[in-house]
Length: 393
Image (tube, rainbow, N blue to C red; front, side, top):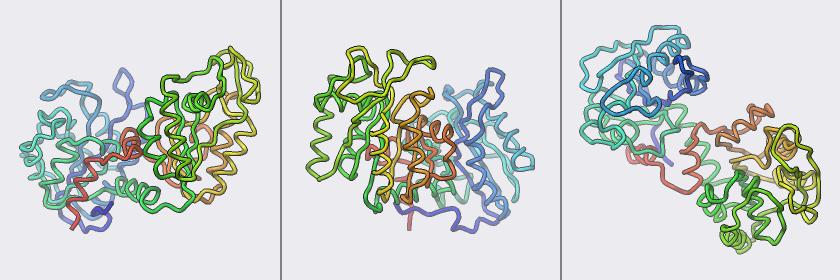
């Protein structure tokens, strides 16, 4: 993926329009409860301010109705938090599409919730052209929205004089390219989750390229069914056994592997008080529920990760939220932290596991993308990145 990058430009005195992802959670009173996305947007903003650019930043927040801004839709709380981080005032500009507001070099303003503009979600060309007139340089720094072709993520990139990837977006593109375009082998993918159906496209896409495809959670249970094992009352999708078979066949044809658990941790309920039992896969009872992999299976995964050149991680291998079912994911996380392989990790549950086991500093790259990361794993073209690629010259 070849795109122009903000860090390669001199933006001194230029009007810079940054599409960030500032869609942060808030409580009922409108107070920001978690500001990681705001912090992630700061490097691009600071880069432009340090070069004395006139900086405009916008983002979506929530799911507003186009054409109106309700109080809960406003970026006002984000403007306050941004000003605290940047140690300078950040004005909030409403009704900004038609221009008519001034931004001085060295100043940053926040443009009100872009999804409140009529035509944003439908990527209206007229709207995109109006926004492009506001700037000399368009910067997309919102990887989390890269899978959506909207006016501020796709349309404006077509019409702005210069269109580039921001520092965060550039880092995402570099990490994804490193993991997928020319990865160091063996290439290992870890896909956990409750349902095969929710990640079927990802599994098929990865099965065509990886050397080892590790499955966990309810997904692994469906694969165990496909291999002829009994799984008791474990979460699974029997109607997708044929799909699991097909994926394993795809891997075998490439001399690759889907290593399945040989031992598991079971209980009769999912709770903090449930009694966990470690048993062999062939000893699973009629009412057992598989809630984690066992120590022998975890040791096998550690061996695979230790020998990997590149690791793609999306999903835990057990119900790690409860300590008695966290052993498998903890060992996997530790193996990744100590591996020399390049690891890219993404997805909400994966980020939660990384935080739980405190290995963030030891993971090669942690994607901020959510849905965009998953669609990339599915092999889909991300419209926002495609728009930037078209402007590479």
